[in-house]
Image (tube, rainbow, N blue to C red; front, side, top):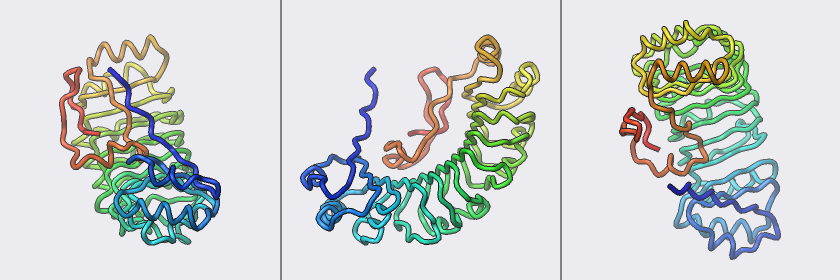
Length: 280
């Protein structure tokens, strides 16, 4: 079985050949870290007439969002070090990654955003509780006290967050998928019992969890897929053997073109016979 082809990326700068922009295939990611020449901006605006755009911007490259034609075509965006309070975000944005930076996430409420990933930065996720379309949220390297999980979220992932328990997810009554990775302060996962829709779970690098207690608790949940690493290969194999669940698929990210190609998230059967709640 062949692997999916990597997403092509083109760096935008004053010397970027205009033909490479105009002839770039659908799904190409355009990256800019400095202000580009007018001709380069015009070439990007030209292809924006007929296709959606995936952009990766930082520093002076953020100026591209001031072009109305470009902004109107952007559905997937990665921002590095941006201050959201100083930006006008693309009106049709569906997938967003924030690396560093800060500002109020309330600016996202007016957007048809479906998937959001945040790595570091000065952000409080409380405004996202009111977001009507956000389905997938991934947070990395943020303080535990800024995390909020709203009733509309269907997938949530925490990476490197010093959570001691999962009390912050109790309000996520629509959650179907939850992942905790490198949350090495995590001692309790009992809050998962409050999530009636939870079917997919990953616990990796959560070394304080007791193996036997974790197995006993997971057996009480209606899980369909699991990925676990809480104490070495032998222990992980024991958990997999005793629970007999399907292997969890990769977490959806803003860079995954399948997210934007999907018209719905209907459940599908996995090859292993398990049930995958996400069709990416």
